[in-house]
Image 1 (cartoon, rainbow, N blue to C red):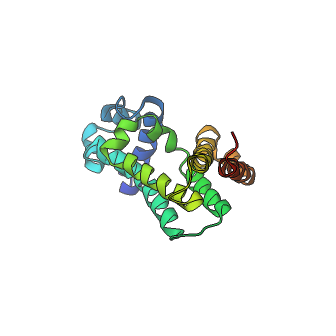
Image 2: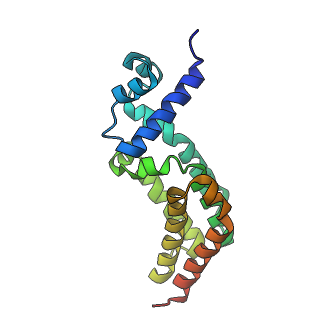
Image 3: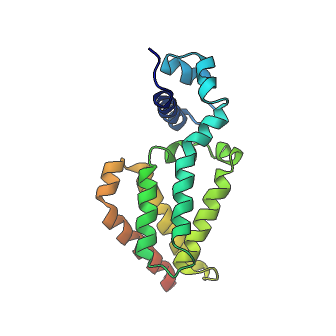
Length: 183
């Protein structure tokens, strides 16, 4: 009896994510993914006509979550701890995907995700310090957001989630240090 299509697609995404994270998008072939799953390349092509289509399927939930996050804050003003907490939650939720996409930035460019990342970060920076903030304040926002993202990449999701409050407090300290113009 054949497996249900949704289970097969989920298995394909899981194996692809693991291989993309370990080897990078460009160095992973559809043949490797098919072999790992014990299916033919033709079966893989049935579900995902190209490796690029597979990558799009992997990043779509992240793209949707980040678009919803930035849209949810409107034009502000927003309490920075809420921005940091929500951003951290999205990063942890997608912690399995982030190493894979960060390992191959060229692949992100092919599907427009790099532009999306830059747009999201710009929007979050603006929410945190304003569009016309001086460079030290912007640096604090960049350091805080980058640090939160890195925690989700470096730690496993469960450990990262356990330190959510501490991570948000450290991000707030980085934002404050930037805003105070400390040298």
